[in-house]
Image 1 (cartoon, one colour):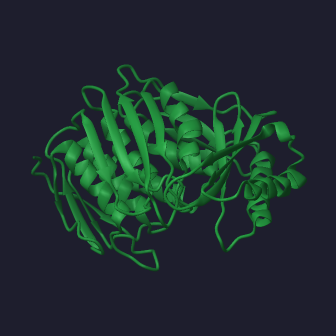
Image 2: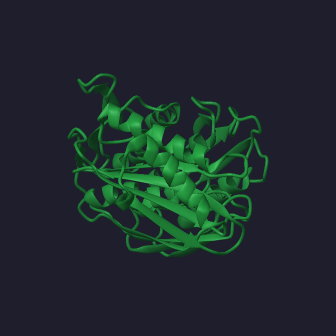
Length: 350
């Protein structure tokens, strides 16, 4: 176990949410350095460690044989000291709630990309959570870029899980990048291939139909773009995901249904998101821009053009800089408010 002093991270940094903790844990595990996060989720109305954040912490501790202090629910301070480099293996983690399995996977994936062999990671909890990217975004937008970077990664939805019931299960297969390569995503978005996945889980199919009608009225997309996925299981839930596939990347834009929202509202929200994304013309959407920074910084780096960064993404860049100074830089992409984000890779400069 390392004996160096931990990197100190204030959980109120930037938007002050769970991303500060997750990025800190992931980088600490990957780089073999201890970290102490104070004021955990200090920018949230209900601060402190929740189940999904504790699952992230315990997961990185398990894959590195590390030590945790302060991992009780509600804790405002957490210290993690890796016991060694990430170890390949067959891992299973249960959140114990509808907390996002996708966020747990995104925490352990970067360090496992540096392990000495393949891993399989199974996480149980929520797979479609309004406060996190859903399964479709990870499968169709995030992981394809990592494959271009040289990693072999596949994801499998064993069972969907929506809030508040949870009950979902997802499985990730990871083979580290033996020879990572830089990734460039800079071509303007032009006539992307289009698809809308509407997932209805334990609720009437009429919900999907009404959502689609509202979406199509605002976008004029043909019905051939619609893909309704029906599943049954624990609880019920609904999500719409618009997939816009460009030459170099895919955008996954999401709108979640809930008892408090009409189907027409859910479809309209997604339509407006699509319209804003297409108007910007950047190939990388705000959520994907956020997700790519950390793994690219640990691999061979790269560069991509995106629209204005979300506060979430800007916070992520700030935390990464604490571990890898100067790894993420930004400049004008020369197209309105779009940015060119350059990530210097730890294993090779782009």
